[in-house]
Image (tube, rainbow, N blue to C red; front, side, top):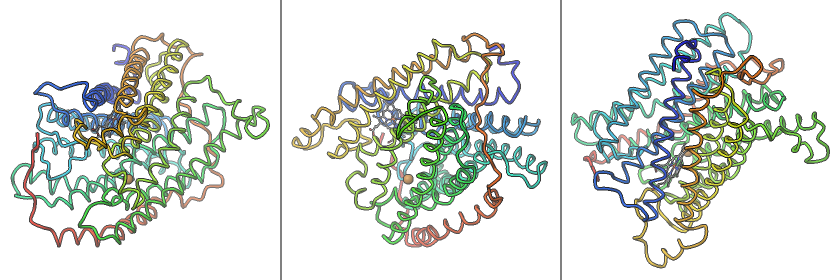
Amino acid sequence: MNQSMNLPNDRRLPLANTAVAYAAFLIGTLCGLLQVFIRNDALTLPGWLDYYQILTAHGLLLAIVFTTFFIFAFFQAGTSKALGQFGPRVILWNWIGFWITLLGTLLIVVMVVSGQASVLYTFYAPLQAHGLFYVGLALFVIGTWVQGFALIGHYVKWRRANKGQLSPLFAFMTVATIILWVIACLGVVATVLFQFIPWAFGWTDGINVELSRSLFWYFGHPLVYFWLLPAYMAWYIVVPKLIGGKVFSDSLARLSFVLFILFSIPVGFHHQLTEPGIASFWKFLQTVLTFMVIIPSLMTAFSLFATFETRGRQLGGKGLFGWITKLPWKDVRFTSILIAMLFFIPGGAGGIINASFQMNELVHNTLWVVGHFHITVGTPVAMTFFGLTFWFIPYLTGRQFTKNLQRLAFLQIFTWSIGMLLMSTAQHMLGLLGAPRRTAYTGYAHEDALAWFEGVLSNHVTMAVGGSILFLSALLLIYIVIQLWWFAPVSDQENKMTFPMAESDVSGTPALLENWKVWIGIAFVLIALAYTIPLSEIIQHAPPGSGRFQTW
Ligand code: HEM
Ligand SMILES: [Cu+2]
């Protein structure tokens, strides 16, 4: 600890964020472990602890807290590297934002732990949590905005000092992600401030459920891009550097991020395909817009593999696939992220299935969906963050990622991959056979249906085995994090970690790509097209507001 006291602010800030991220990760994965055993009827909880309480904690701690804190750590360290050291105001506002986000997090956690907010991480009305839970959510969002705007302030200053120049790719992508996040949060802020808080504190009688769900999903889909884009930043910028290559195309990279801003927001209805109260036309329109995201996704996939192939060939790889063997597989910082990418191939394909109007009918609310997000956010994003952690903490603490730790890191990503393969495959299969998600036990189905759940893979036991391996892997990661933070040898000059940022040639990149006014403008036009009419219909034709339900 003493050593970290002396670190400069642009190190301490990301370290503070990383600490919260990994604390949340540890508790969150422990909840996951309990879940797989409870669902498998191998564990019964004591009366004071409820399955849905644990599941709420799991979703929030991993999908919201772990991701967000880690992302800000990455942004802070990366922008101070790409654009130069933070000034005192940027530092101050980042800290203020960090503390507000943390305060919000603690309030949320206290409410969930004290059993007053078992509403799951989507907090659908008419389930009602204690009012302070929603206050916690609001603080959380405000805190991230303050950190986000502090970083944008740093960026604006750089642009003023470097008139007419495109910003470094890392900074551009950070700004794009923060813009996406701020626009996305408008929905959740609206429903929390104007619907949930007045309702939970008893200032209003009922809540418009459909409106709250629609506003939630206006936020909930771009949320997944808020997780993904920082992982893509690692893929576009960090990985090429690790393998000794360059960014394949600067303009392609920037264009793909711009397209993500445009096409990830006006699409929330694809989570509400089974809901009455939204006319099919609007669901259809938003589904079409959803599929537009395939374009920047494939652009990303193409660029990355082109970088790998170019580099592999430079290193002497021959034939169609010879370049693959030339990549630095022994470097866990690379290998972890490559495996993360591979998981994203079935993950993305599953997403296309989920978003397809008819196929959604089959998988909706089943364990399939749980399988899906564990091979999207739970592995491609999470394991990219693990891969970053291996150099990021040494970079921040000035310690060494020793050979022994590197070996443990391989074991960690290997076990995470195996555990996830087992767990998510079981979840996908069980889901196809009709096993529901978000239920504490599954023994209530018809006996014929129960027999379907006795396959080798389509089995809650397989899911539990996978989940247990995952939890062991999580513990191993925490061990590595602690070592890198406090115990690994302090690095000498030779072993010092740097922040790997690949070169990106901006000479062919049109300046228009960094004209945020244009892109934010188009984003709002698309949002208005996709949402104005259906939302006003939901408001005008609303049934009487719903009363509160507390099922726990
Ligand atoms: C030890 C590792 C993990 C295990 C054993 C695990 C297990 C599970 C299980 C069994 C469920 C479904 C429960 C149900 O529907 O009844 C679930 C839900 C979920 N998991 Fe995980 N998980 C793990 C890691 C992660 C990670 C790393 C993330 C994200 C970064 C994540 C995000 C989620 C989310 C968002 C849900 C949905 C919660 C809800 O339906 O409200 N999980 N997890
Ligand atoms: Cu979505």
